[in-house]
Amino acid sequence: MATRTDFDVIVVGAGPAGGMAAGTAAAMGLRTALVEEHPEIGAPTHCSGKLQLHAFREFNLPERLILNTLQAGAFYAPNGVVARVRRAVPDSHVVDRAVFDRWLAHQAQERGAELLLDTRLRTAERVNGAVRVTGERSGKAFSATAAMIVDAEGARPVLPKTLGFQLRRRLILGLQYQMTDVDLEEPDCPEVYLGTAAAPGFFGWLMPIGDRRARVGVCVDPQLAGRAPLHYLESLLRRHPVVARRLRYARIERKLAGPIPVLASRSPTAVDGMILVGDAAGHVKATSGGGIYFSLIAARLAAEGAASFVGGDRDALIRYDRRWRRRFGRELRATTMARLALNRMTDADLNAIVATIAADEPFRATLERLGDTAYQSRLLAPFIMHALRPGHLATLARPMLKIIRYGLRALWDDEIPAEENGADEMNT
Ligand SMILES: Cc1cc2nc3c(=O)[nH]c(=O)nc-3n(C[C@H](O)[C@H](O)[C@H](O)COP(=O)(O)OP(=O)(O)OC[C@H]3O[C@@H](n4cnc5c(N)ncnc54)[C@H](O)[C@@H]3O)c2cc1C
Image (cartoon, rainbow, N blue to C red; front, side, top):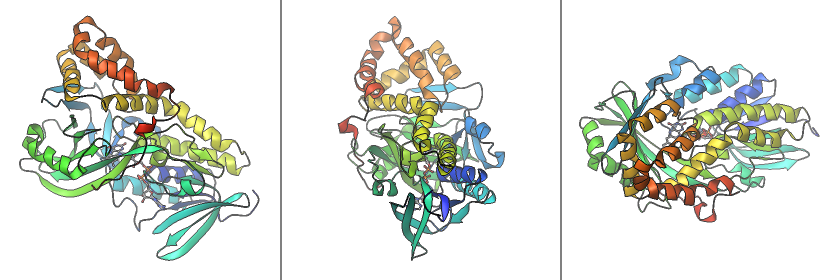
């Protein structure tokens, strides 16, 4: 490195991606800073906290982070028909995101990372072979230098643009209420409410988090929705017969809101001196909006890339880009494909899909055997095979054509198609 810097690596943002990246980098002996704009970690929180068991095994996460365990799923069609699936083993746990993020940051500190709270970074620039970041710390001007930056700023990163990244992604907007005294049918079964009117461009959900509590929310795509998320959430609570029944005696404990980058382009996530990780890199499944598990995987790879880069390997950052794509790029492509097709489906299409799954026992058994909310692409081929059977062809012909027409292009297009780009804002 050309100059002696304040740190080897500065990790920007203490969410799951930043906490894991900083902890791994510090454990590898790098002089690491973990920078968070808020005075405390994990607040405000926006997320439902569903995290696959894979993550608990792979990252040795402690059981005390678990609020609830999920093993089933119920998918409500716009016409009220429900398809229920139940796996033989649990799929995910629910974590309290504030506690989870704090635990990761604490681990990073224990391993030697310096935690800089109340520090908002605004720019990054290359200086003599290093990178300098500037911003404010507790209201005063702040700057620091490092050999490189791991950007884990979340869905709306500002630093990458100042270093020349072209970020192309589409943000959807989520709003949910954490509620108590919820009348749950099965405490291990999250519910999904589909419908172009209920949640345009995404879905509504009820996520049980234990002790008769649940997070009930909607995400909508501003390019498809005429109103703000609050309108759709209030409609779901009042007008959806199942939700209204579950929430008869429920009370709101708190409100959580945030954007999700569901359709990120395939453009690079590394430039000289900076790599992107987590939501900042678009490491989110476009079908479900889940991003924690892939963020953790990418964060570990990012820290390994940082260690090689600091050790003098200039290709390490580009290799990071290739490594995370090898690990879960296929899932991002497959879920993008599914999302592009789902966004074109009418309520009649969604009714047909749910009714088929609800009525066809062998089809459901396949979904239950192969279904894995982390690796959803495994379901694509079985779904197409079942849909092509003579008994289903007539009902599923239209949704299938949409998968072919709108979904398959995600497999070969280098970018999200132009009309799918843009990060529209909308009040939650
Ligand atoms: C409504 C909703 C529900 C969701 N539910 C789930 C779910 O159940 N399961 C799941 O897997 N995913 C879920 N997600 C997605 C999940 O929350 C994200 O994928 C995940 O938080 C990404 O982690 P991250 O570390 O990349 O970003 P974040 O968690 O957003 O963390 C970024 C951090 O960086 C800080 N920061 C930002 N800019 C700066 C700056 N310039 N300087 C200093 N600090 C900065 C922020 O304050 C924040 O602490 C949900 C998202 C939403 C909106």
